[in-house]
Length: 82
Image (cartoon, rainbow, N blue to C red; front, side):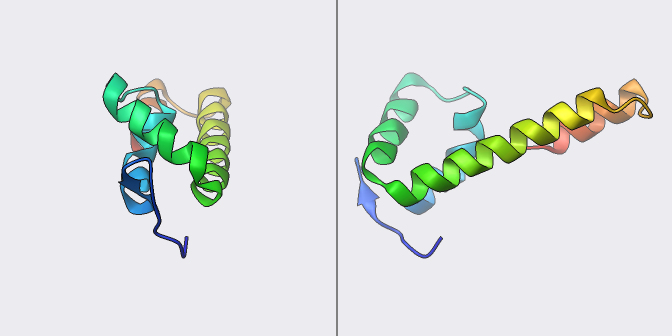
């Protein structure tokens, strides 16, 4: 992403650094609110975040559905997906 704007008190790079935790719902309320404020005013991060969330979600679903994996292998792969 070429832009690095400050919106809602955060720069784009700060949002990207927390994007995985944001998508997983693992941020504290204050951090989530700051990212929400940034996303409400930054189309580039909103677009990238939506695409990121979709890819991560699809990858997790594929790993969970894969029949040829042992449970240990499945858990190991899922732990590596942001």
